[in-house]
Image 1 (tube, rainbow, N blue to C red):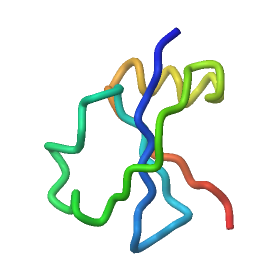
Image 2 (cartoon, one colour):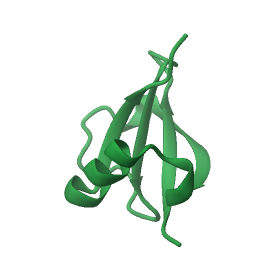
Image 3 (tube, helix red, strand yellow):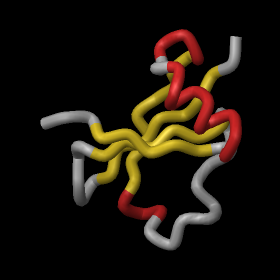
Length: 65
Protein backbone atom coordinates (compact mmCIF):
# COMPACT_ATOMS: atom_id res chain seq x y z
CA UNK A 1 0.00 0.00 0.00
CA UNK A 2 1.33 3.41 -0.98
CA UNK A 3 2.17 5.99 1.70
CA UNK A 4 2.40 9.77 1.50
CA UNK A 5 4.14 12.42 3.61
CA UNK A 6 1.82 14.93 5.24
CA UNK A 7 2.74 18.54 6.04
CA UNK A 8 0.88 21.35 7.84
CA UNK A 9 1.28 25.00 6.86
CA UNK A 10 2.55 26.86 9.93
CA UNK A 11 1.12 30.19 8.72
CA UNK A 12 -2.28 28.61 7.99
CA UNK A 13 -2.69 25.47 10.15
CA UNK A 14 -5.92 24.53 8.39
CA UNK A 15 -4.01 23.82 5.17
CA UNK A 16 -2.42 20.43 4.64
CA UNK A 17 -0.12 19.20 1.90
CA UNK A 18 0.40 15.60 0.85
CA UNK A 19 3.38 14.52 -1.26
CA UNK A 20 4.81 11.20 -2.35
CA UNK A 21 6.70 9.59 0.53
CA UNK A 22 10.27 10.84 0.65
CA UNK A 23 9.77 13.52 -2.02
CA UNK A 24 10.23 16.45 0.33
CA UNK A 25 9.26 19.98 -0.72
CA UNK A 26 11.95 21.00 -3.24
CA UNK A 27 9.62 22.95 -5.54
CA UNK A 28 8.00 25.16 -2.91
CA UNK A 29 9.39 28.65 -2.51
CA UNK A 30 7.93 28.79 0.99
CA UNK A 31 9.00 25.30 2.11
CA UNK A 32 10.04 26.68 5.50
CA UNK A 33 6.37 27.39 6.28
CA UNK A 34 5.53 23.69 6.18
CA UNK A 35 6.00 21.29 9.08
CA UNK A 36 6.22 17.53 8.55
CA UNK A 37 3.49 15.75 10.51
CA UNK A 38 4.00 12.13 9.47
CA UNK A 39 2.87 9.60 6.89
CA UNK A 40 -0.58 8.52 5.81
CA UNK A 41 -1.54 5.49 3.77
CA UNK A 42 -3.61 5.69 0.61
CA UNK A 43 -6.52 4.02 2.43
CA UNK A 44 -6.78 7.05 4.75
CA UNK A 45 -7.32 9.53 1.91
CA UNK A 46 -10.54 10.46 0.11
CA UNK A 47 -10.63 9.10 -3.48
CA UNK A 48 -10.47 12.56 -5.11
CA UNK A 49 -7.43 13.57 -3.10
CA UNK A 50 -5.74 10.26 -3.87
CA UNK A 51 -6.33 10.74 -7.62
CA UNK A 52 -4.83 14.25 -7.45
CA UNK A 53 -1.79 12.92 -5.57
CA UNK A 54 -1.25 10.15 -8.09
CA UNK A 55 -1.62 12.53 -11.03
CA UNK A 56 0.43 15.48 -9.71
CA UNK A 57 2.69 14.05 -6.99
CA UNK A 58 1.14 16.42 -4.46
CA UNK A 59 -2.24 17.63 -3.21
CA UNK A 60 -3.44 20.38 -0.90
CA UNK A 61 -6.36 19.89 1.48
CA UNK A 62 -8.31 22.32 3.64
CA UNK A 63 -8.48 20.65 7.04
CA UNK A 64 -11.39 22.53 8.54
CA UNK A 65 -11.11 24.70 11.53
